[in-house]
Length: 250
Image (cartoon, rainbow, N blue to C red; front, side, top):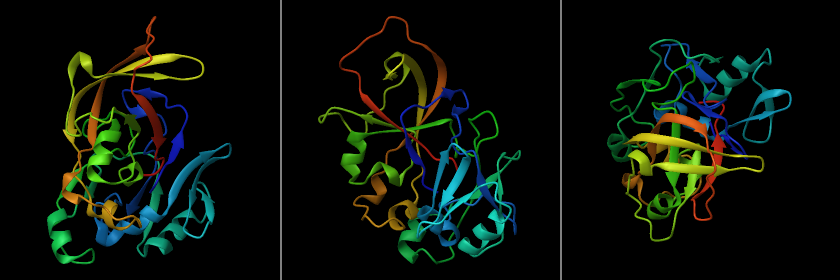
């Protein structure tokens, strides 16, 4: 599902608190529902998960809003996706999802039967959230400009506004990979170590209405958190600007 913008993210070694907190489980096989298997689950990208004072809610196409603790939530979601599913708030050990081969999907179409190997979720993320792999997902505006799509396609936690001449494929690791996020009350630093390309999904390019210009050029980084500590005496007027988002439901 789509997520929501956030003014502040509380980040620890498990990622952004509340992010990928819920997921749908396919009752026929126990796999986590994911738009990476576009044939079955691409309609989930039409829904949005968000949080308000009364808890976590899901907004369906047409505007209907339902709380995740409603008694009929499983029945409603099953009817929407056309398969029996149930909502789960803790990732079971060894949880998996199907990732349809993107090249085969592009060649044969979204509804074709294609190879779909199983991927184990959150292999680099402690805790019980339903992250694809690592705790935090970041992308730069340089990358978004290069591939010609909006950030919402990939549901990143952080969108980092980089200079216009910043190389879209540049990855920085080690001491230089330091982003300072400045809020109204305090500033803190998150050191990000390690980077890997996120496998792109054809559903993210096709289900949402805007055309995806360069489907094979996605460079969205999964960044592993190595440390999170308060910044001490650091101020900067040239730090990258950061926009925060969170997808409560996977």
